[in-house]
Image 1 (cartoon, rainbow, N blue to C red):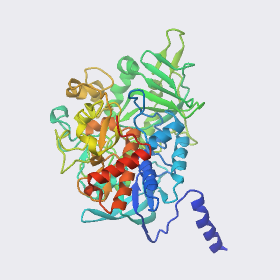
Image 2 (image 1 turned 90 degrees about the horizontal axis):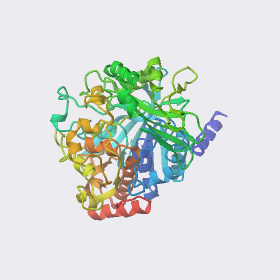
Image 3 (image 1 turned 180 degrees about the vertical axis):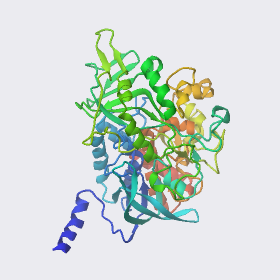
Length: 557
């Protein structure tokens, strides 16, 4: 009877959408993707479609059973898009998901959209809740990774489990938020803003490099919206084509409201601050909203509690840093401080035409069965590491040692004649958004002398003199996916070859999905041509470009 039940379970689990593996054996795959965010899912989808005869494995390295990463289980359901000539240029996988979900979406619904998209490929398997514990690298080639199960403890930290799975692959794709596979396989990386010109960095930032502030998304009810789309003072209220609400605003409250200023003066030195808000309802006719406004400073995205005491934990962390687990636990506790909700309620606006108030004046935290605030299952990390073209990247190398430089992103042309013109022959997509820095230290919030948002122009006055926000998308070259050393690795995730300042534009999820599509197709080409990605010739890149266009990607302006 027990044997019969075991057989039935093995047969049934794949039908339910779960990959079943023999954990005492080494799993052999053709393409292995680490990371379940938009980039990893796009890579898996494109690889499976471009190489239907090959075996594809997607490893979700978060303690969850859903796809989408920051964009779903992380609660970031306000899609960061920027129209160019009336259109969204980030197409391909993201374009399909966006068309179904809308700009402001239910996080569970988006996760289901992505899962159904990937489920159509029988050659794609998904392993949830595992992360890299160790790996074997020979001659700059990844041979095998050792995965171990992970789970979130009652206390909030993520811990190693007991299940181990060894995986051998031919091509690996790093779509992680912390650049884990890139770092552990021995490639040099540039941490945070290490590549900025030295004159724009604080005096203490010498032996370490800061990363952008992180955020913990949280849920509230009681948000008031006008009856239809409206621009009221510095607030914008928008209902998307699917009927979901999104809002952005609060710069005036951030800069001048005495309670908000007092809050940031008190808690900024303790590592927390409230910034101007963007938020979205959790789907159509849903009174619950996900809110993006809580900045958490001094988080090292590379550092995890489960890695303490091992070679995986970074040795060059900032003084007094929080690892990702500590940051999430402390931020969730901080949300329960009455000062927080009372200050959040200051983010409201009165319509001069009707006298009605809209925004967060009556907001209440949503709480779970234990009375704790409902928050993202993972942190919203904005930055970790970047891959230089060669060697270590030091101060002032942002325009010389990255596949996408600061200048290219800022001064991209309206056609093939801008600062990014030399990226055109090897382009694998377009990236576009604002160059949106969310501060590195609390003092950045008042870098102009008083509280002022956004902070980008105050932290980098040279950027402002060079023209400020990009006006055109930037061509993303194939080289952006390549690490400095490892031959069989592609990087569409946070460790992609993008300077820190260019990353401020390209870090948003639609752009990462574009990189993911390209990595998946490039992996398929590598197998078909029996050639490592670092050895691609123009004919290989042309094949990738053609296949991406067949899959709906946009490569041209």
